Every structure is written in structure tokens, then in C-alpha cells.
Length: 272
Ligand code: LIP
Image: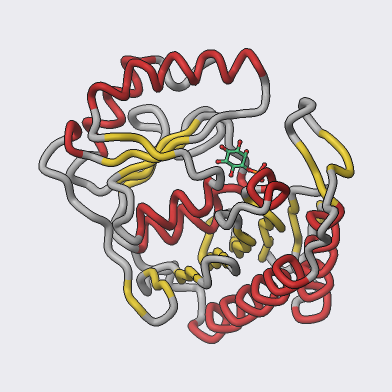
């Protein structure tokens, strides 16, 4: 999919450079500045939906970079940043996607930074410092892990597909999601639950998963990762005919996208 013709190349170049700088600086802070006694600073939708001091510190660092480099842009951040801006560019930021992994010292967490123009994601960066991986994409220019161009992995059938998924923080939703995965599991090769939607989408892009689905993720979880997956050749969406979103997120290699989407529709993965 090519970038809208009205988007000049130098603007896309600048947005990518700013996204990389913000993500890498925040990633270094989170990796090198993680307190040994890191604890939960607050909770959000439930007792297991946690925020640490580092989530807040990382979002403050990122918004500082954006304010310095792109002062007229809007910003939406998971930890409360919400500014309109006047440039037509809006940044969608998750300072730590995979917060529980970060809290427990597990490696699969990432800084996700996306730039949108007129509501369309045109640049995405997912920075995974402990994994030593920087995923990036610009609309129409492909997806990359470092300098390696990414491509999704076909599967001969859904039954031979490795599918990523995740679970929400509310008990009722988790019970419903557990029922969906119980019925899905016998129909696929296996599932993986990595704990970060952004990295799950990047793993689809890198061919480490054939597909991914989840109900209930937020724009900051998926904005950058969806662009990276699509630029690597993935199809993305929600229920059949719907865009990827909070109701249901589906991303997969084209060989299994529709069978996965149809299976999820039949399992009622789009409702609690
Ligand atoms: C996480 C998502 C993940 C989901 C987790 C959590 P957070 O985002 O990336 O896919 O399964 O429950 O929502 O809260 O770490 O930013």
C-alpha cells in the first residue's frame, strides 16, 4: 500500500527519524534504569492492570522528544497524554507495551511509537531493547527488523499455523477469552501468548507467528505494529469486513487470514 501522494518523502523521513529517536531513548531508559525493586505504582481497569513509575517516566521522555522535535503535532499516550496539535500529525504512543512482562523482568516488552497523518498510520517503530530488536515501517516502503526486510510466513493450513493471542485484564473478559482459546487450540498448530500486542504483530511481520488475534487491545498497543505487519505482507482486520480495532484484532499471513478470521467469527472471539 503506497503512501498518500500528498505526503512528501522528506516528511515521512522526518517522522521516522523522530519515532526512532523517541523509541530508542525511552527503550534505553527502561532497560538501563529499571529499579531492582520495581513495584506497581497504580492500577487502572483492574488489580492486574498495572502501571509502574517507569511507564510514566518513559511516556514523559517520549513526549519531551516529540515536543522538542515536532511541537505542533498531537500526541495520544497510554499513560494519559492527550493533545490535539495543529499540524495534522498525531503520535500514538505506548511507553511500555507488555507492562506485566517488564514488571516481572521478562524480556518481551517494547516501546511502541506511531505517527498518523489525518488518522492514517504512516510510520511505526517498535523498540524491544532486551531482545535487541528495532522494528520499523513507513507506509509503502516495507517493514524492517534492523536492516533486514521482513516478510510474513505462509502456512499450508490453519491446522499447521502458529497463532499468537493475548488476554485482557477484566475477569469476565478473561473467562470468555479462555473459552475461545480452548476451542481454537485443537484447530491450529499451537498458540503463543507473548504478553505484548506490539511484539506479537511484529512477530507476524517477521514470520515467527503465522497469525495473531486479540480482543480488547488499544490504539497505542497496535498502531505501530499493525503498520509493520501490513508492510511485511500481512492482512489485518477485525470481524469480517471490519478494520482491526478494540472489538477484535486479527493479523496473519494471507494464506491463513480468512480461515482464522472465519474461525474467530464462529467462536465469538469478538464479544465477551
Ligand atoms: C498489553 C497488550 C497485550 C495484552 C495485555 C496488555 P499493556 O498491553 O499488549 O497484547 O494481552 O493484556 O493489554 O497493558 O502491557 O500496555
